[in-house]
Length: 213
Length: 80
Image 1 (cartoon, chains in turn brown, blue):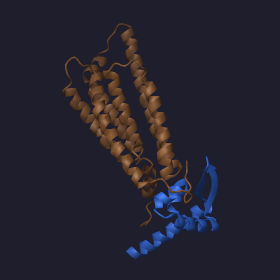
Image 2 (cartoon, rainbow over the protein chains, first blue to last red; image 1 turned 180 degrees about the vertical axis):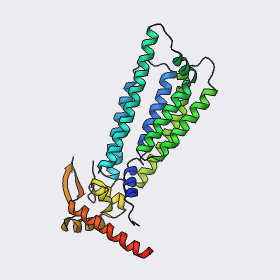
Image 3 (cartoon, rainbow over the protein chains, first blue to last red; image 1 turned 120 degrees about the vertical axis):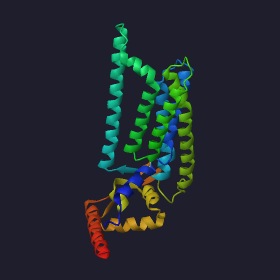
Image 4 (cartoon, helix red, strand yellow; image 1 turned 30 degrees about the horizontal axis):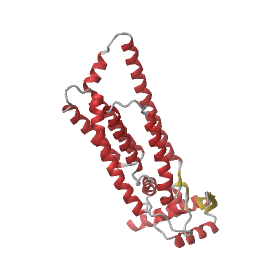
């Protein structure tokens, strides 16, 4: 019997970096922006919001989290898990882009493939499931259980949304409408976590402790 | 040492947060480990703020592994 649970120590060290709720706030805000963006039919390129949000998130980590919790470099095992998450994300993105290009090519050729009609009919469920799975994967690879709950909520809300979608709305509008309250939930919980985090880890005082950045 | 064993390196504040120790208490432990050659301490400035980075040396990792083996034997004997 090993009295020292190294796996638990490492897991706690890693998850303490995400107790700040900033990731929840980032994803919540992006979901709400996406919802408003689609429903308001904005003309601004969406990637601008992604760039701004990511920059704000990175700076927040530097100014809020690290001065309170310090700096750590994790070992290879944890870093390889991160790389797996990135690999899966890139693979999924490549697959979706390829699918999009195939659809575009076929539509440009005057054909309307049957699978596209299927997606149009069940789009909310398919996209909701994809988003839910993405959140599950994030929760699994980053050891953040609450993201599993977010993933489940995403799937449930998109399925429910597909059943009560107003007539005349396409599935993108339905997803956008679901993303706003869903994003608000993530944003709200992230804000609550941030409040708790700041109370649990106040800024160190004066000369007593040196601070990592 | 367990907290340093599971990471590549960490600064003083991180170790304080993870262990729940006070500055003085942790500083005293780290000094002894440094004298024993089990940890390396790097002091640098990040901006205008001092930063102390710590990591286990190879001797430190070996010593900790030995300690764990001994503890497993002790607990194993106790349960028997």
